[in-house]
Length: 98
Image (cartoon, rainbow, N blue to C red; front, side, top):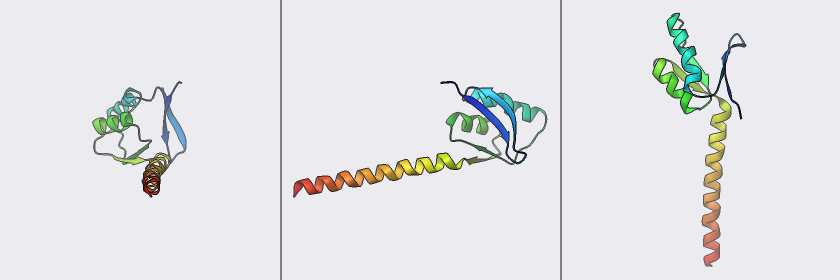
């Protein structure tokens, strides 16, 4: 499977850059370019990729990071499902003992 990293300007609703891959290297060059030209950002929105997070903290430590809604909801649903299964298994064990 091939991945792309897409850099967007959310306010302008424009694609700024597209990079091959989804690792730290795919955003490092863009962040370095921003710093070189003195561009400043207040916040960055991203998925919950550890690589993107690490690159952002390394090169733009002062910036606020906002995680996208989809991935936050996905993690919450997975956790709720895990807890539900845990309780269901516990109830099944109690019923078997009776």
